[in-house]
Length: 231
Image (tube, rainbow, N blue to C red):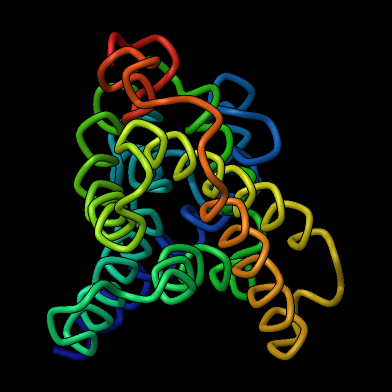
């Protein structure tokens, strides 16, 4: 029994070390820039163990991205649903929607400074095999926020809100990426200050009257799409 527990702990330690190393290397060099042997050497594990646990670099890459991407997305939705419950049928205040939207991915930087760069690579230059996966994963995570924004800002066309939601995501990703390089990222107080400033900045942009009408944009022009997909 003890031997089995020791093997389980050893396997858990190996996979964690592999995933942490993969997150750092894939973030820095991209999917094509990292070989399995180099990854195994950097993680200080046997190459055979890497193949045993994940089978291929592609499967390891997917697991590396999704182990944080999915929990962050689920936490965003959880916060939004709680805010909607507290609103008791009324539109959720704009600043609250934005806070629910950006807090989980932003605060992930505190513990996982390499993830923003990895996420950026997959949103802007995803490997071909990630395009279809993310095209399925992204809409359920973003559409509830666009719907909430539409209830709170009924004067703005849906297409404009979709576009501004994309702008907000870009701001969050850029700031998270920059913060991940700063020593101050370890300070929760500093991160909270940055979040409040981002919320205020994004809210001001969202409230601005649109310069175009929704009919000026093609249908679903700014719904979630990825490079190399047809949307």
